[in-house]
Each structure stands twice: as structure tokens, then as C-alpha cells.
Image (cartoon, rainbow, N blue to C red; front, side):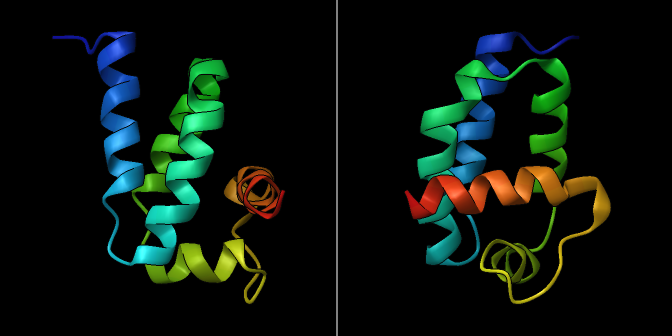
Length: 85
């Protein structure tokens, strides 16, 4: 069974809000509210992939403490810039 677009957005918004650490809850919730509805299927796939990453790693990537993997660099940069605005 295929997931509907609306269900996928809701699932991803919930996964953005309920992370392992509060900092990532705040960062990803803000990003998801602003950007998820405007993403195409490929961008949603990449965001979904990012949500599978460990919060400690994500936090270090978003804050620039550690370089993000090549596959997520552009998305991580967008997340970090969006949060800083």
C-alpha cells in the first residue's frame, strides 16, 4: 500500500517534532513547518533519509561542528540557514 502525500507530510512533521534531543525538535520542527509543503518527491525522499540519522550527528552537522555527509550537505546547509533566520 502506498502512502498518500498528505500522510507522508504529517508523518515527516511528527518525526521532525519528536526527536531524541530538544534542540533537534526545535530546529527540525521550524524547518518542517516552513519547507515540507513546498518540497517535491525527491526532496521529501532526502528529508526522510535525513530523519533516519542520529540526532547527535544531525546536531553537529547543523551547527557546523562536523561536516555533513556529501549526500546531505545541501539539505543540512538549508536547515541550518533556515533556523538562523
